[in-house]
Image (tube, rainbow, N blue to C red; front, top):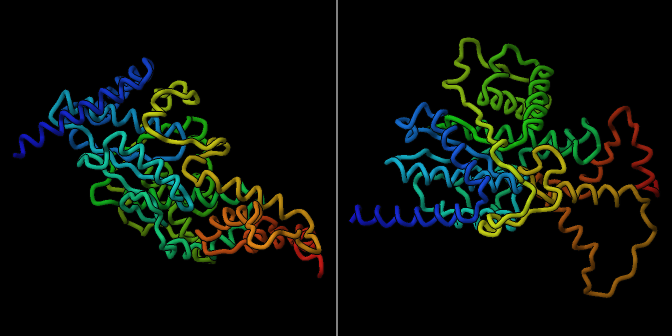
Amino acid sequence: MTAIHDQAMQYIYQQVLERLLSHMSQAQRASVQLLIQRLLVAAGGPEYIGTFRLLVLQGSDRRSVRLLAMLRAAQLSIALRSPVTFQLRVLVASLPTADSTTLEDHERSFNALFMQDDSRVQLQMIEGREAVAFGSRPSADTEPWLLARDAMLMFGHLVDARPEALLGSRLHLELADAVGFALQAPAPADALVTAIPALQRRRYLAWARRNLRLAGARGPHGLQCLAALARGLSRLHGAARIPPASFAEPAAGAAVDDAPVRVIAVDDLLPHLLEEQPLDAMLGFTFEAGADAWPLAAFADPLALARLHELRARSIEPQAGRPALRLAGQAGDEQRRDMHQLQLGKAYGINQTQLVCLLFSPFARQGKNLERFLLCRHADM
């Protein structure tokens, strides 16, 4: 019975591969073959591909979806040629928290690639600093994010008041913290595969190294290996979460890392990323406009930045003396806007008033924006 089941599954996987390749362009099919060769070399040869474990961060942009499709095609192609293939761990990242629409998009892609029932694939998503089993419904438990509430409030008064700075640096630390936690799994990944453009990778790496040096990190161990770099940023994230804690270095004599985690960059194998292709329709993923508006935006809530910009634009206008009249029972566009903007605050356990205060940073730089904050938000004082 087991042999019959295995044959049936092999037939299904072959059908999935044929359907996937039929929706790819000629350039993409050629890129899949190049990706297979690159993975075989990284694994040490075809005889080691069965124990080779890959980790991929799954974002909400076209680049991430195309990468996942290519990895799945490579995995199934190798499985048809040899008895074993590589293990794939997919970690969905949509910080600070993924909404139901984003999770449903990911689920459609996973179903189209027939990944949910494949033992060679592990589907997870980031919740707080943990990697939990993927689900299409967002978790109602906000306790992990409530732990970061005080850090977020303090963080907003230490950085630039622009939404990009407020979200960018904080979410980058949270992303590194979650990745570092995921790399500590009982069966850790041998390599992280990414399609992030080279310029963004270098900028993020320079930002991470600079922050670690400013925090007092010593020695090259925290700057060379991906796992060590993620652990260093994780400690920095923990220090910011419990002020005024200091940056903790590893104990003397402690093992820095068991095995180096490599980074396999394949952005050069994904041509014409911004063009719509039949592959997108097959995967059933809807892409937000401006998903690449700021670095690593693919791993953040696609609407978070827009919500903060809209909230900031509305907040800098002096408050009117009396709200506009509205028919009883009519919600109005403003109320719907407030509901969207409050979603970001709920992830951290902060309300809209606190979010507005963060965007003004009235107490930073010796109260430079305090007068403007009072004029716009507390004109009656």
